[in-house]
Every structure is written in structure tokens, then in C-alpha cells.
Length: 456
Ligand SMILES: Cc1ncc(COP(=O)(O)O)c(C=O)c1O
Image (cartoon, rainbow, N blue to C red; front, side, top):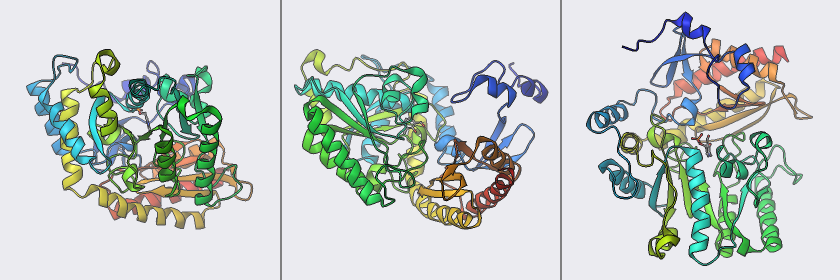
């Protein structure tokens, strides 16, 4: 049997032969990552038996916590019954049929009518971009090929997703990107080009920029606009409540499809069932993944509304054919996990808990900001939040890599797992956390911030 190796062997080989996402392989060999070997409830356990409150929630995705017994049981039952069969033309499976109905019901307020299953968030984005172009061809607008997105938006790492990605660091080494991808300013109150920190004014500025570009290029050259309802990986940028409705209105008036990238926001993270619902918007397409399966199976879904569905379903032959898909589209184990996750999200009050705990989390972060000079900005919605760290508050100078690492290490030693991204600390615990868990995050952060300030 393939038994786990002893911990010395594992530690000796850490990052030696496997490369890690979003990191420098040489750097990882010099500073190997923490090895997590267990997970239970809202905690993780490292290779030395150290227990930590998981303030990362897996990676925004483990909403029901790491135990989630009904999800695990649904997966193991499905593995026993049928571990895989494909859903390419001619065959399907029972669980994916059930899941397509469950998602239609869950996202009825957003008007989502059909689901196309993928293997994760990047696939979901790629699917939405491709289907957006195909939709425009079907309705007789083949010149509509451009994509618009927001700076600081993150849409995964495939070439299409990276092309609409709004962060230079995810693009630069892989250029040239897809032609015809344009970026609008971000709803970033702390740093922006509009000379204001008023989010409503910034929203107006972004909308005006979009309108001006549409007039310049011609609406009939633009296929779709994609945005995260709350920008996650770019540093948890929470737009003003008017931004997404304004962009929806511009898209509608100009025949541009609106894609809501709900890979992080979907299934409760913002304190609403989706980020679109949070802002009262019905997009044309939604991209989902992550918490769809509680993070237990790599699966995503691209959802489309009735207008898009009808165009495809009534198009003649090849025009409407989806020449697109993945071996794992509609994987039965992923579908079983998703069905159990959706059931638990709805029956366990998870979304309301995220909203309530989110308010407590922001209050805790604001208390820390009063105490620690190095916190330049506090941002968040529901259970997605960020601290932007600075070495000089007046100048907003980003805090250096060394002190940020010190913060991470000190919080780790105090029993809180955090995630750092540049000079941001990203906080996204499981959606089932309790008040006492928020207190633990506050205590861990407090210790980390003190250590970082001393190291700065
Ligand atoms: C908004 C958004 N879109 C797409 C992706 C890509 O998802 P994946 O990493 O599953 O490919 C992510 C990942 O964090 C994301 O946050």
C-alpha cells in the first residue's frame, strides 16, 4: 500500500521537485512553504501538529469548513457508485442533471438558466469569454470581439483570463496577450487616478470612461465586459453599490454582454448568495468555481441567462454548437460534492452567518487600524477582507516584503493562518466561523502587526 512517508522525508523534499503557483521556484526551495497535513472544522493542522485557525478558508473556497461531513459522504458514495463518466455529446450522468437544476433554482434571482461545467475558475472564465464571442456571431454581430474589464480584477491564468486580468504581474511574463482586451480603472478608493476617495464619484468616473471608449471604438466591436462584484485577489476592492448597476445599464444599452466573475463571490462569501445579488444586478453570464464544491473537488460552472440560452439553442447547426469543453466537464464526483454543498449552504444559514460575522470582522480590523500605524487601509464585504499595509501612512508607502513575512510568521506562531499578497493581508475564513473565531483572528493579527512594526 502507498503509505505516507515520515515527516523528515516530507520536510527534506519540500518544494524540491514540485513547483508552486504564483511563486518563484528557487525562492521556494530557499524558503519552503508550511506543510499542512490535516484540516478539521475551521482549523488546519501542520506537519508538527500545530493547530491554526484557517483565516484563508482553504483559498476562499472552503465555505462549510474542512469537515463538511455531508459533502465528503456524497463524494465517497459517488466514487463507489461511479467515479467517472464523460458528458461529451451522447452521454451524461444523473448527478450533473440534478446539479444543473439545483443551480438554476439557486441563481433564479440572477436569471441564470443554463450551466456549462468546467474544472475550475480559469476554465469558467475562458468558457464565458469564448461563448460571449460565439453569442455575438450567432446574433449576427461577428465584429463584436473586444473584451472590457477592470484594473486589479483577477480572472485566472488561461490566456483569455490573463488578457482581461487587471494586474500587470500576472501578464507581463506571458505577453503578448489576446488582442482587443481593454481595461477600465479600478474601484480603488485608497489609490486612484480620480483624485478622490468617494466611491460613488469613482463609480461615475469608471462608467464615464467606459462610455467614452464605447463611443471611440464603436459598441458594435465589443463582445463583453467582465467584472468581479467585489474584486478579490486584487486586494478586496469593494465598489460603491452604484458601480455594477451603472455598468449593467451601459452594457444593456450597447448590446455588450455582462459577465459577473463570481468565482470568489458566489455562494455566500460577500454575505449574499452572489455578488450580483448583493448589488441587485442580473448579469448575462456568471462564472463560478471554488465554493461550488466547498473546495473539495476542482469544478466550476459558467452560467448563462435566458437571452443567451435561447440564442444558442435556436441557432442553426454549427453556429450554435459548443465546440468547447473539458474531459472533466460535469464530473460526477464534483457534481455530487456540489449538490451536497448547495444543500448545506441553504439549510445551514451560511450566507446570513457570513454577513453577520463579516461585520464583526471589519469592526475588529478597524480596531486594529486605530492601534497599528502600519495599517493604511481596511476593506471588506461579508467574509472577504483585506488590510493594506504601509510603512508611512501619510505617503501610503507600501510595506516591504520582509515585515510582511514577519507578520505572517508571528500570526502563524500565534495560531492563525493568514494569506499575504504584496503589501496586503487577505482574510477569507470559512463562512461557518463563529464570533470566537473572529476574536482569534484579531488576536493573531495583533501579534503579527506588532512584530511587523518592530521589523519595519
Ligand atoms: C475572480 C476569480 N476568477 C477566476 C479565478 C481562477 O480560478 P482558478 O484558480 O480555479 O482557475 C479566480 C481564482 O482565484 C478568481 O478569484
